[in-house]
Length: 491
Image 1 (cartoon, rainbow, N blue to C red):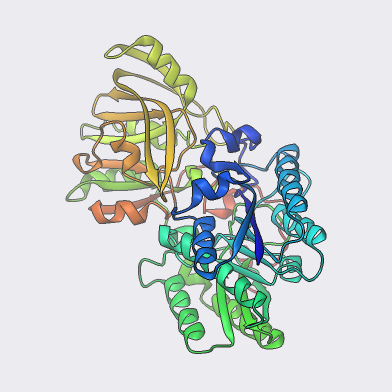
Image 2: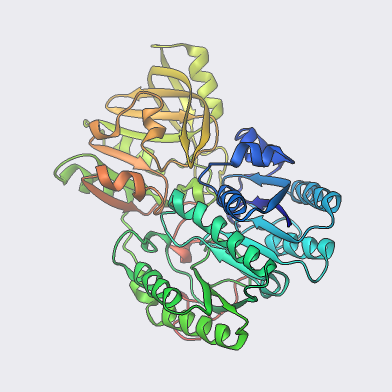
């Protein structure tokens, strides 16, 4: 059997001004923008959705036909020309491979292009047009996907991650599980049908963790038991959605895959989102203003105290150049070892031009998304200059040229490329050790917990302005449909 594989993965933030064009995909490195055989060559044995599908195909003796695969970090809305170009490459490869017995797509599920609110569904429907009505399609998704009815009409299998923070093995397992169900369908062993239901609620990512016994972890444990105890329940996914999307069709969703039991699947999906609605208040979190958060960190025993600037989370589409917490640190005249980052390629180049060990005055941050932040002027010593990177999910993360600017007791890491600030190796890659600092600022609502929680003396969530703020009422939503929690308590 011949099964096509590919995908286009991006998470959009309606409030971010970070432009997502072709270069935004390409500049992360070649492994994030692949075509043809390069997909199999580069992604085999990686902890990715496609890596999991490749493993499943090898086990089942399935020939994979690679098409086109692209993945980028979260950003603003996708430039239409870029999304269409990538889709054209995927469809061209798919047509060249015709006929195929099945299709596997690795997507995110919360993609918005300039012309398509549901850019993911657009890809799925265009693939369906090419392969015809009878070829099964399987889609692996991020847990923060925003599914639409046409997904479950055009694709037989839709499964999301189950962990948050997203664990490497979970990405891999999701791609593996989607492939296994499609292969079983091709052998005639099952007839998978996906059902969708949604509750009108947005919940903060900060309290969606599956690492502890919180509301979302309890829901995930429940659905795992349901699937394990019923052979007709093939998979269940809970999707609390990427909340910073200004769309009419937004909420907490459930996808339930049954073996040809659509009515039962729909009933289960509805029960799951109804349960989520009943527990909506358990997701609420307390956000701390920057000045108070810094004082709490200074008063806390042990180190490092990790501050989470959730509103500047690159993983949710922010620019990573927020300055509110930096300014609060400067105002506090900190005398304890402190580490934080700012994505600012212009400041990096100015510091490099000044030279190692020089004292330089720079305007940093607030440039890539000035809607929420303004630049801050800092003076410091150029402590290190490097072209840095590390590995995550079995793939390279290229930070590009980086400079550590020493501002008194503060080490400000200036980064050229857009990277998640969720891993201690962001700092270690340039010679900084987070465990030696009293205060470490990360830029993430929850994904940082996988790597930072084991070393943190305490974690404090900081409420600063930004495109990824989970203080939803501070964001300029215009298109959401009401009722919707937290604005409304009834639906």
